[in-house]
Image (cartoon, rainbow, N blue to C red; front, side):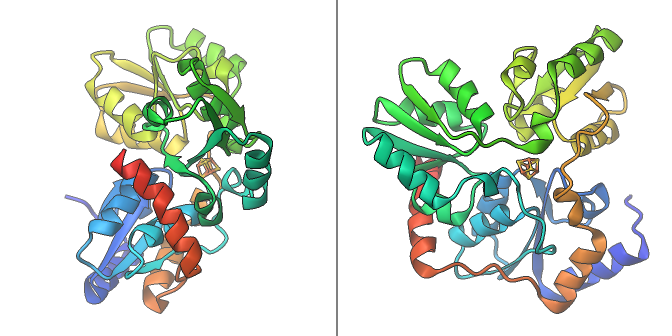
Length: 303
Ligand code: SF4
């Protein structure tokens, strides 16, 4: 039985009173995850928001996640607890960058990682998640692909889809990019029996050591299913925390000492409480942008 602190109880009361659905990303603080109606990755979050019966959706995550939820459920009120919780990687690419790349490579289609702004999605051909990127790249009816904004996920896909030519935008996730091969080798030396599950937002020389390379949800499933008693996790620290709690019989280790997304940590209990109390901050998008971005997201969902 979960025991909640005073602020958590007040949040749960507001959720009930306002008939809200709170969706939390795996990287926000655990105490926020504990009061959410569901904890998920960014795409599952948008899908759950679209299917929800509630008209008030609170997205405990960074800005692009709130935008994706709004794109897929424009008739609902979508709130973000922290206005300044952005994603530095999503901010690395602009719609102008995409249009310039299109002009330079007119035969290519634009695939954009879901970790991007609505404005970038609106000028892309198709979106992808880290778990669907490989499949979508293989299935796209073209010989050249412009991949934005994550150069690491893009190069991972390019290595596995050699029949196509890739043009990579140079963006990256500062949190995953910080982990080096030396960090991985040190962690492997310290825990030689551990299997290594790593996110493809890490650099190629980190990813190449992975027993599993996959999205957050795939990493969690791998840890739950493997017979290995020790697992080394190559993604955000909250996942290490979650797995230690969920799998007390396994030894779960993180790589490096600072695998933390500072933006996700801005989504605090206090911010969630004020968000529900004052019904702020509403995600609003221009109608034309919303419609154009929806096409790229729908293509991903229906592919
Ligand atoms: S972990 Fe990286 S990609 Fe995810 S929100 Fe933080 S900065 Fe963006």
